[in-house]
Length: 199
Image (cartoon, rainbow, N blue to C red):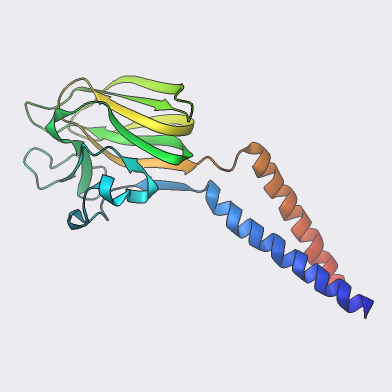
């Protein structure tokens, strides 16, 4: 009877730890935002709160069929651009994220932007880092941005139209100490599995 109770306890621990690992590991995964699955009929990216982010209402959804925008995406046919040549456009999220980078480009038009700067802020509105102004062309330029714990990203052109595409990010919720805890959970899980096999 005691042996049966011990076996049930180990089963509960085993599946509890397994569920914890399953729930925590995806938090550390990276994602890419490509804008090709947006349906303009459902509203703007700001109205849709696309991919769980808060998008500046001045972002417009663009398509490669627009005059001058044919080669502007790194993949797919849709992208975001600053309609009305607006500056200091914002992308933010309640849960901080690590910004890995994105693609910048400008249309083949007279009103195009030639330089764009990215500045990242944390939840206290402190500057995490900036890229400085990057020179962009009509082909997508990858701008790697190893900014961690970002709550707000400001993208500012030095005048003119520009686009973004292929934004890559990772959730910040799993930090190094939590990653260590995950490793300990995994070791404990293996130990419980071994003990369960013995019983």
